Length: 351
Image (cartoon, rainbow, N blue to C red; front, top):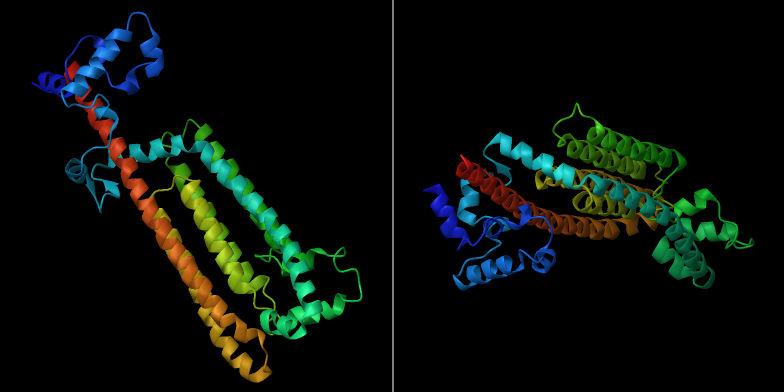
């Protein structure tokens, strides 16, 4: 009965190759159509399948929605059987093994580009302060104008040191923070390589957990560096909202597109990121209210609207990424379930 059902679903059987799923047939369609002994068989079986209203590639298409619901739970985020769920994570980890290295490389390139942004931003701000004093104070605060007064008699375009560079970059990465992040990247690459290389680790899903932990640690390190270790007094500098936004957006994007981590872990990461950004930011804004009254400074006044805008941007961007990650995760699980059901059906036919 199972054999007859499979034959009816696939279509008219002309030869053995005509009812095999394309993923089990060696070579692509062009190779098969070009062969002397199998070209007419392949073409005729495909035409017969289309004429009968059947899809010859049905076995590699995602399963239908009702079948998917029978085998999953939690809105499709997990398979009901642990063995199937574990096999899916193992397949995802193996499939995206090299993608993780590209993610680390992209992170390194972005952090290096952060220095270039700092230099360009420094040139623009100093040029603006040289021409418009009031506009410089209103837009950047007293700290930038005081910095211009210190270098206006020097060749400030060609004499930029490291501290000045990071003061005007999107993320103020001190030498200590740079060393810690570099060590974390090396540790992430080595651990990822060892997991996939080791024969003792049969299920490679632990590689997904490790890369997720690397991104969590990078998030915590960068937020703490922005708000505590490398933060300058608010009287002279209010660039910390930009550092928080830079951290959340860059790491969150790389996590979703360059790791293969399931959407549940992406959700946990973004909840942690939003909690850290809003928690530190709101606490500091409350302190700045008192500082603004005592010091009568302009800089703390600029921080409030800046932080509100970047918080809204980060949360909106995170929601968009999470929705896309969820939909992509569901599609991937549907394709995997279709493959599992197909293999199970073929095993029953063989028996």
